Image 1 (cartoon, helix red, strand yellow):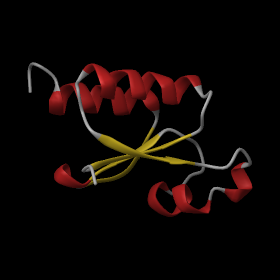
Image 2 (cartoon, rainbow, N blue to C red; image 1 turned 120 degrees about the horizontal axis):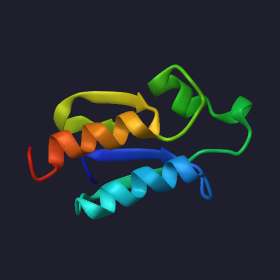
Image 3 (cartoon, helix red, strand yellow; image 1 turned 60 degrees about the vertical axis):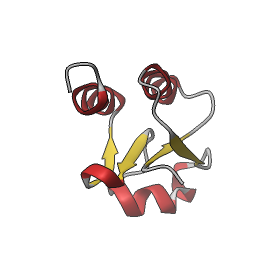
Image 4 (cartoon, rainbow, N blue to C red; image 1 turned 45 degrees about the vertical axis):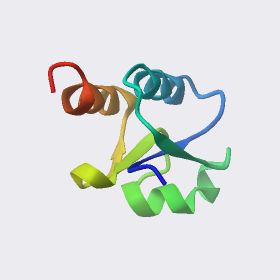
Length: 84
């Protein structure tokens, strides 16, 4: 099991942006596919207090439910990128 978990929805361009960054950085991660309907996204809502995706959890750095693709990409670059 990887330290990073990504909540995502296939076909979501914001999720793809995060996946591209994870892959670019060579990071291992688990994915959890959320339902299409926001009203059925109980699991992601429990960890992030909202139903949008993407959301990541990074157990190694105590990140528990970070939303917003731009924030996630910035976090991943700062934490795991070349300048980290």
